[in-house]
Length: 235
Image (cartoon, rainbow, N blue to C red; front, side, top):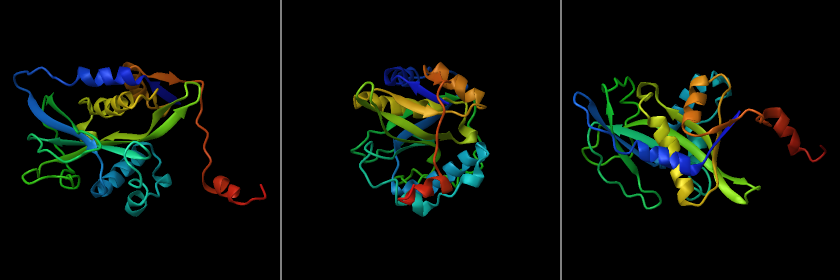
């Protein structure tokens, strides 16, 4: 099942969470969305595996850190595979040099600071001095697409994941909205992705963001032996 969202609608959604209201008794959590670098590959690999676990598809998980490192960073950002990393910290972030994409920083209010049992495992690999509490909380991977009817490019979101202890805080909305905001900046026509039919919470979330769930479409996929058969010119 596929979902599409107007880039302008999702960019507006991002703006709606940009300036939280200060409330007594809540905790500030600093967040940053930035471009991934090769140093993030170990975290990306672990996040993809967590997604496979959530989708009950670990039997399909064959990615390695090496395969990710050799395929994800061969082209400039937004021209091929692009990954945004979501980081959280209890302290304000130090500036990082990122000419291709200005990191998006937000301060959000949470009822309590989540206990992160994997904080050490997901400690950010792109930090400055005294930034040792920066933790990778999620990611989104997307690629350019094209809509022939409009004659315009777009983005297809392949994967989006927020780690379990950071869910229900608006971080998934931040990541998806960041992709849509980039699409608007580049004059793209749409952002689209797929959602599992049984994931009713995700479907509701996407619809609330303004996405239209296209129930009349089905995903078609060639993989494994069925794909390899086309390597023989005798088909």
